[in-house]
Image 1: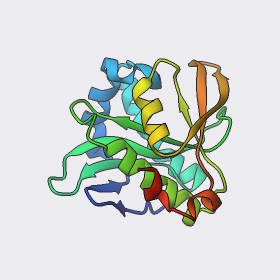
Image 2: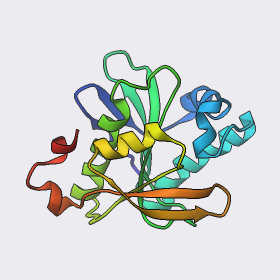
Image 3: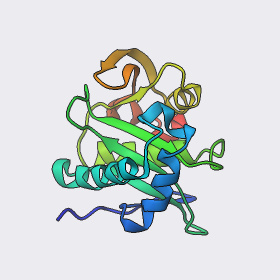
Image 4: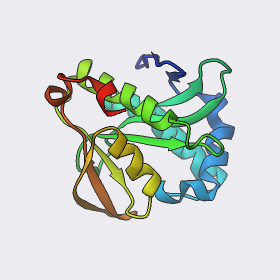
Length: 180
């Protein structure tokens, strides 16, 4: 079994997903908020998505974390590293749950995930896939210093934009905070 590291930022705790996250994932994937990430889904498919998130850690040695507000323990989203079969490259992805957008949580958690990918896993590059109509995710990618690089057509989800993140060498002059 893979041990999922816990990451912390100024306001957030990134932790491995488990059964307590079933209601939050069911609610997110059952809503229109999930339209850009394969939803809306039935509760059964949302359960399978959570199982996929957990299994990704075992298959790849990394994955996405559930994001909690450190102060309250409230779960606000799912952010991290993703590279399932059919993906063009390893990705940094983020999903925020209803009521938590516009507070910088996605950027803060994604910067921590990117730092982990570069500093611990040794990644030299990363992308974020964004549906063309998802202006909020494009904004997060831009805040992280990523730029629109190209497009990718996914077999189920259609056209997606590839936002290329600066590599660790480019960040060494200013650190990840330079792009926040």
